[in-house]
Length: 185
Image: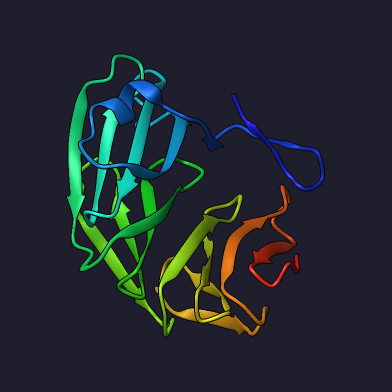
């Protein structure tokens, strides 16, 4: 299962879906649900994990195949708005109202890096197709491009005159698209 990219290509490593089985288990409403599928570890078979985020500051990981709870990623100070799985499924990036993006190891649940640079709520986040670059959008009206390895801002784009609500890469990773409440894309 994949999503259609800007150029019409399919991105098999990440797709948006509504996991009703998973969200029913939550006592609070979920604001984002993503599914990652692919080889998690070379010696394991293909697995399928589901993650949901909510205003309670947590990210919960579930087995999408049977609905079993795996772990909770805790560390944000305020609600989590969005997550993105790296193309290989080993890293999860999360965007939060605490003005940070966090990188997590998806198997251990360990927080790897805290990316600071936005001056208001971070609303959306996406990995590049190679997983080496991350893009985030914020209520501070900017789009930031991050180097995943170092955790540093590569570039800040003053992209919109209102909050940025969605970001993504083209399938080949050469273009970034953002949408904002100003109606621009």
